[in-house]
Length: 203
Image (cartoon, rainbow, N blue to C red; front, side, top):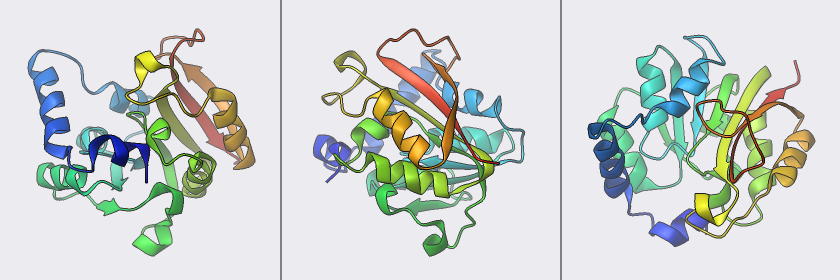
């Protein structure tokens, strides 16, 4: 069972969506992840939102002209995504066993994004397998972007994967570190408790 399932019971889709809706109404920017990704690849690029949750990132990128696919294991989150954007392809899958071919989609994404603490909330011990699966969904030269907390202040669960472990998993999957930031606004990484990492597949 994933840490996310242990934390939420797989029933928090509506609550999660309501929280972000309230943030948006208050004037908070809730599209930093989509804006970050849009700066990396041009409109029209294929984007996989891995651990898409309620679809916030994929839906915004689709609005900006990207060809988006969302994948998540939590039915309650996917129900919200499908309600808000029924025209987009949403798939239920465990990222540790993610196989685009089994879902009938091409494994040639220009960018895969894992936002919202996806990696720290995976089932313990599956992180390297997930990196390998996501790397396998990229076209040559494609990008894997992952943002996640590294300490208790940035996570709802005890810290799990560390950056050296994540980088090692990426290297083993044929991905090279391109850049690392402290926020989705591309602030320079300073060794703090949150990191957004960009890795590239071999051309």
